[in-house]
Length: 449
Image (cartoon, rainbow, N blue to C red; front, side, top):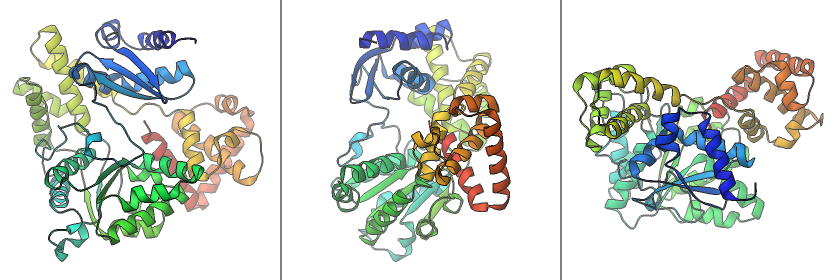
């Protein structure tokens, strides 16, 4: 394609085939292509409300559309006319501060506390009040470093990380804060190795910060060089009295492909889990979100939503925002009948998308150290062959693709695929380490969005 306009038109055509005519005209057509620079697409929406709905409901579809049209994945940055600087996420290679995370909703004041999350909330507030115990030097709180918060996706872990950032920035404006996803830590470390800039990497992560917050630490599992690097980074910071806060979708002992000594370091601090919110907390979350939108929802409608959406705060907020958008645009009042339709749509839209073969191959590559090219290639070296077998097994396990389709993808005869999968199934019965590695690959691949 010769022009960005052609690319955008192709993306619109892709989206038009996958949503209703009403949704396309109401949300997709209101989206404006702005620029494509440094592998990042910038899209503009007419208002913050439009941007929230598009990101939550159609963000993944836009990512898939650009990848399908352009032949490679790109990052998407969303802006709106009300605030051209607002971003869903933006990471810098230089020192990161709270200014990178502008969602003022993610504060302690806006965190709905219930029995399911109270311990994690109190622990996070304690850390924010005195990061690294640099003020009180209170020995009774030494086990708050690191603070390790774990729980399933969508329960508020990222909210608490942002809340800590906001509170620390407000109380201690001179403190240097670094907030980063584990996947970004991996990428930056790999780049540092590739370009021989490890000194700059160490300066950024070990010498220049007072508070490190790292999200989704489970993504470093199986990446041995990164695990070793993070171990030393972690030790350097904690020994120097710097605060570390970590989140994960599981407790340290269940992150299979990391070293025991790193698990031990995590468990030396404070472990705080977050469980799905109980009914009363779910009702409060809906009410708080509605209040922030200046949107009045009758109690029976709140009760209905809280009863149907039980395990994910993002879904609760997504239903509330979509209900607000629909009522605001159509000048309707919220009813249970309307809520029923919206709950159904949001629950379907926010389920984890089918994991693509590409994501599985990339996760096997990261875990085993065998390149994507070699997995697809024909070399029979044992390490490469084993990685290829694991790939066949995981693809079959996750996607339920036929042996013929898997063979076609990897240019292998279906009998070869079947034989390799049978071999892996036999091996994992006697090799617990291999079984844990494969389970970790499946879990990580499913988590990648």
